[in-house]
Length: 147
Image (cartoon, rainbow, N blue to C red):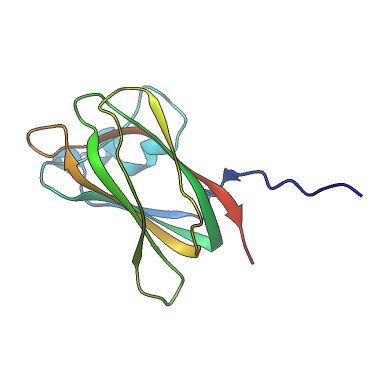
């Protein structure tokens, strides 16, 4: 009998709906949220200034998050982040805190024992940038879809 191996895959798909707190100068053509998910290292989401920037994702079905991958632009990274989530009709709760380095490299944060959620929100509590801007080149959430 073969043992079932759970492979964490990206739970972000074409039906995943994303929202962001802000876009630099409202210039979505150049800095919109879609650029976090386009696998192009030349493009990025660039928030406007202000504290507590965030990204929220709503999935077409419940997911169990096991890992978060994010690539900031150095100098515009978040120092403290929290991952929040909730089931479809539930209250949003804090799942995990994580502390990225201020660098250009892709960073990975394991999320232990996350509950099944339909929606997640990544809150960037404070930025390395004096004005609170956040620049994200890529964002991915790994885990598995639950039914």
